[in-house]
Image (tube, rainbow, N blue to C red; front, side, top):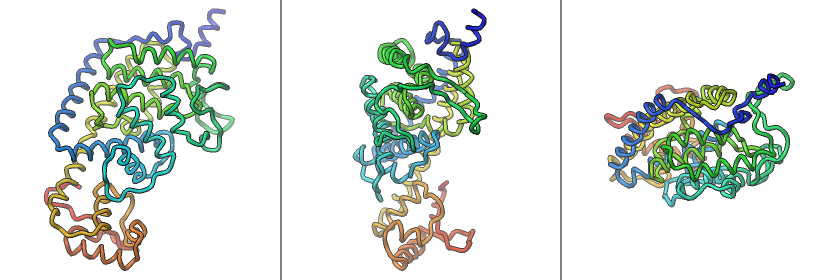
Amino acid sequence: MSQIMRRMKVYIHEQDNWPDFNWDNNQVLLKLGETRNLQGKLLGRMETLGFDLQNEAVLNTLTLDVIKSSEIEGEFLEKEQVRSSIARRLGLNIAGSVHSERNVDGIVEMMLDATQRYLVPLTADRLFDWHAALFPTGRSGMHKITVADWRKEGPMQVVSGPMGKEKVHYEAPKSERVADEMNIFLNWFENENGLDLVLKAAIAHLWFVTIHPFDDGNGRITRAITDMLLARSDKSVQRFYSMSAQIRVERKEYYNILEKTQKGNLDITEWILWFLNCLTNAINSTEGILSKVLYKAEFWKLHSTTILNKRQQSMINKLLDGFNGKLTSSKWGKINKCSQDTALRDIQDLIKKDILQKEASGGRSTNYELVKMPGGNN
């Protein structure tokens, strides 16, 4: 009988001493030291930037974070809506601000609450507020779900494959365990003060996603909790690196290590090392965000005396921030709500001022791109 019982304990949360995690301290501390060193260097470098450039970097990072956290779940958000929603909530004025949908505002609201109010205690009610923000209609796709409360029914499984041949990657604790499991987690989250906060972020990420306390939205809320602890570790509301964006890049490896850990024992050394390596890659990837911010600042410095109308200023900023697809005169007109003739006049004026040029690739329609500045890398 005992052998049968042991075979039935497939998942980490079924272990007798769950959630008493352990790890190889020597391996973890070595990697943690490297990651913390990189983190400190990045924050020090960002402090040398002016206030406006810092805000621009934060806006870019948060926009990336929200978009990529949603992409991991297969939901693709409109970049301009996300950027505009974040800017409004942070009180930043940006050119070409657009209306944002409720689902965009919901995830933005959650991510900003986690990172801008990172010292506010994490409670069940706060998590319920986040969940309600993610699902304002009470539905996930076509399905009605329990909102702002722990999941109540049925086994919560992570599966893949066609119907009838599904592979079960993971099964979460039964719903009747969730309230007690979350009480233990939240008590640890706020009262365990002996751990380095980056290490705590790695453990919290695994622990929360293993409990899987909600009908849907667990991944996005897990990443918000992770960002909250990383903000505590930085002692700053300013976000200059995106863990979600890096998880999106390493998504296959992320799901593999998660499944392996959740089907293993309570030694989570491998998971922690993977998390720290992913965080290191996220910090290193910030170079791309920073170079864009500095390029944009240099562009406007170069053209500080160039006479441009509001449509031109808005479109140039869109191009500098990373325009989706190809820029044509018809897109210009549609975005700016102006006639084709007006769009062409705007574009021709920018070509004369050596700001825009025709793309060399050609094709059936004429596409336009920014002229690269001397020494620029955009």
